[in-house]
Image (cartoon, rainbow over the protein chains, first blue to last red):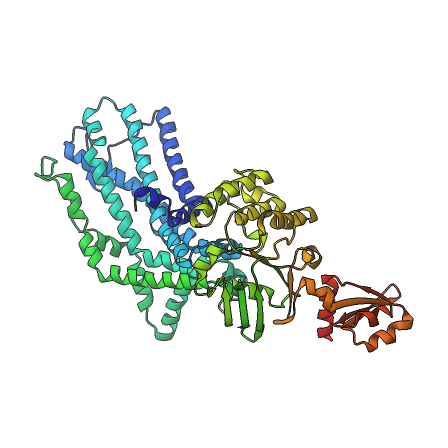
Length: 322
Length: 286
């Protein structure tokens, strides 16, 4: 199958349909992009330059004469931070989308139109999983990179004479490694938090319609159910195993320690990193093998598969629950 | 030999204690327009849902030679359905609807759909939300009529439409869609409206088939007799299905009665489907 036929496959059109319906997926990051760029331009016009000096992630840049490599690392950090900001927005969009999509098509009865077409419940649900888990964060990531790119252009206009700095800002290696790092972050976070995304999809598909306020809010139910489990355990057994497990598994710390090795970037007295390329630093930080081999990752993927199967089953029986 | 498009034998469906379909048998042959008629809760939608593979049901059911529930994907390639016009997503643009169906339905002809959209004068950039109900129906019809399907299932397709749109809906179906190989199965409350286009009629009540007849046979089998007060008793002795008073005269419905015997008592008319429906339903309710 070539790229063109993939692009025009029924599955690709299922994904497109989601983007038509849920305009927040593109609109959310688009608005954030607009706000940041607009505020930077207005700031620039008001005489507040975009600053590249300062303290970012413990890297004290100091004066602009700082060594080239240090500047490059700082630039990578900036690209990644802006990207991470957009990914945080994406995680909110993800949850809203996943909780809503399979519930809304039932409450609005549009499911009967979709089901009049030769598209299986499995394809439909998988398209929604792909949108929730991949498309939403990747769109946000693209918007994040575009934001840094535009900010860099503005900075270039402002600081055209500072060749040392601009060399770092426009270093292809910097952009390449920052993009790879962000992609790695996006993909690993997608896999790590997949049980959460698919849980919201499952509740969205399963929740019976019109049972009071809870019946109208899959989001609320998806949060309340695990909370009730924790409360039940606390009251009945005076223990906090489920709660402790959930907060640990879905807290950010365990994800970071699984997906990223604890490799600190240390500078020598000259403010440089001896004999190391940016690429080698980046590959030291990412730990894909540890991540993929982690029991937490594997169990998470298996649980997600169960949740997806449950969502497919629920959608299949949507008309059979009268 | 023609094989039936729909073949149901002993079709049953329960929801908890409620029996929605109680051993129903019927069929639909190619080239026929079959009306499935019954009061609310008679099991019409349940029957349609089973035919469309939306729900599993007990008994034997084949649609286009397929098991609807198990082979739903294949069934939907050769079957179209309009559940209700309100099911088109409000955010969908006319052009998006065409593009989407064109890419997920192997038997959809976009050029045919475009031709219909132009004929109906639908704005391609408009969202469903901004169209009138009549226009939404036309859009749905254009999508369905461009699909080369052999079976079209319509569940209350004209609900909530004004009379002009309703008439247009059925006119388009008859003139631009129906042919000898296609079959339409339709449910509606508005019996009068589809009376002239049906070839067969099935009455459902409380999950059972109470009448299954070709429209040609209605006149042979049923007769309506209007008599003055002096002949009421004589008419009752002929065992009518039902009787009701109308403007000082009494209207009887007969099934399988001798036309000559009836003519001797008063005016004999061919009953409308609505009359027949009311007669059948009130008979059973007694």
